[in-house]
Image (cartoon, rainbow, N blue to C red; front, side, top):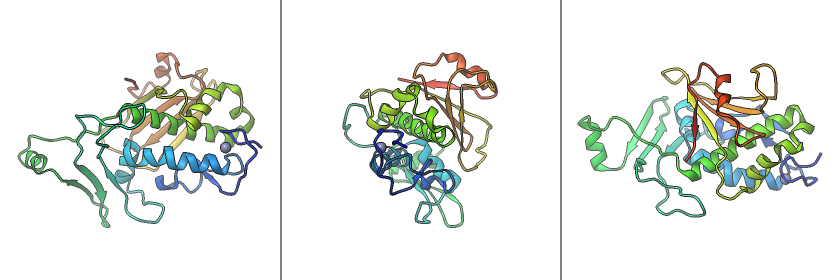
Length: 253
Ligand SMILES: [Zn+2]
């Protein structure tokens, strides 16, 4: 079968992890559907970014998911000093000097490098930290969610996943085209305190179950839901009605 993303016939020497191993995935695999070069590109350019910079990466620490090499996870809020490429990758309101880690005993630790911030935390004037979603982050998260969603779809329905309904998402995931495009993401959290669990992914086919004509990728991590529509970047906002128990917001700029 040809590669899901570039349509070339392999080579297939490595096994694709639908969700990165660094998010604890050992079960969701795809064999001979993603060529070596697409796997290498997506791992390096998309997954690495998302794990290092986005809220999905921060969740690894809260959930205590060890790295591929069995090390405790860490996450830094740091954003680049200068923007590279087409989309802004840093934001003035982001708390740049914080990093998160988890100790061997399973305790969460905040490491604050800035003296002033540390003082503000100590005297109670600063009570929360902000990780600001930059346009670049949204672009990358859209590609990441699209990759996971298309791959789940390919595992269950390989021909359907290769149909032209998904060509737009395919190009966006693999080549980042259209350049600087932000594939809309619906986001919502459910439950007050984080119910820590490994991530859970669901691809909803055009089905009757939720009475929804769109193919959605629903990515759940902790108590956060990230939802993308795989076959249409502009689904009607009504899609939210399919999830009555989550207050979904459309993230956009
Ligand atoms: Zn390929």
